[in-house]
Length: 510
Ligand code: NAI
Image (cartoon, rainbow, N blue to C red; front, side, top):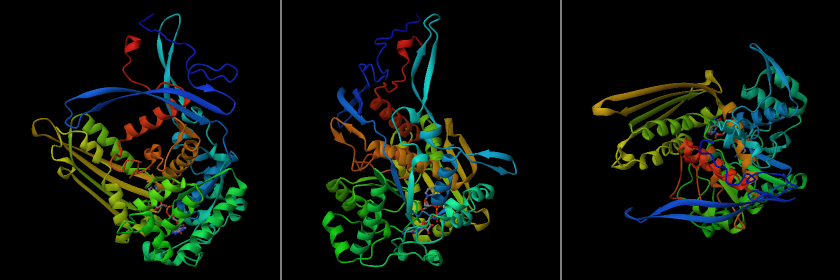
């Protein structure tokens, strides 16, 4: 039979009436026994030991009604997410100059991607085939069409007008959603104008006033309102990129003093504190340093859950794939130069240097792990590679962002290999599906326990969706696209009682 030997034909079968060895289902939980395998080296890397660790991963099966609260509801991403979810929920189609377009979730990892979950062997011929499953079917997940969405914005414009202002979606679709979108108005927002660009002042007509503590209390009331209408709430920052807040808030006491003394803090810190105190997830889609050590520790103490930062939607995703490809193949990537121009409000905000600097930092570190992985090519670490990022605001191109990259590598015997890419993308149409993923998976992660413990305070498994991921090990970050994807998929499979791929294919006589 071609060397194929199935050890236990019943493993991983999910049938409530007939619980099996792995991935045992009962009415409330999926319980999976998982053997983790890895190798640990001594500090001088001369000795190593293979480790096998047994874990029990438990996933609550009941999918809750999820309340989504967007900070920046009326922005390009916020209004596109709301309209996109409504269009999918109602199965809408609309006319474009290229014909009729149907609502879809393309670009969403959970809704449109599949994962390799195993193999199929034909009993008669012994022939081998892969089995792929939609990611959303690996474990029970919220359907984005069931999101209940509200949020805050410094602009009080209703969502129909906001979506028109964004110039992202087609008029024929917005016409069909007009009545529903007009009914959605952003809640008054927390704002410290000094931390976003001064050119945003003209849209700020919906602002909370009061002390830091009063504003946190008001945000908490808004969250409590949402909690009454739903089973679980997630807050997602998709508002303007703020300037870095420095020096960092080092401790919980430092944080408490700054709130009490009414020190001027960026609004993002106040939203995050409100989320932590309400024990709801806070996701940061922009590059600013909201997750100060004092804030992460506060989350740890209060059962808060955090993930971020900065959506990884276009250029950075591509960059972490290119570095996988080039460095992974043994080519010495030596210069990476990225130019962007865009004409949406994000670009306008980033045209002020203090906000651009946050983006530059977030985009700057994405190659670090790839470089650190290869001491043959990079004996001196990341200082030995030139990496530049330029962003310009060009209003005419609107949301249609241009990203021009040049990757130059040193190759065999002193040769040079230059690859240039020119990406024209609709920024919000790439970002929104990723926002949907982090909401769907963020919610799922709250239902998973490993050996009886919940995940957190940082939900590092969401790293796949962020440019500058934070983890529970501040010194250990994975940026590589393929590794991030494998980590996430293998974790989901382990929780479902499906073996993560070891990729050797030995057992099949390959
Ligand atoms: P946008 O400027 O259209 O939307 C931001 C919204 O936030 C605006 O409506 C603004 O009025 C509102 N806002 C500003 N400060 C606020 C506050 N303190 N509280 C509540 N609302 C506030 O920007 P867009 O294109 O929607 O992007 C949102 C964020 O996502 C930006 O920071 C951007 O850098 C980040 N991002 C976007 C990506 C993409 O679109 N592909 C990729 C990576 C990050």
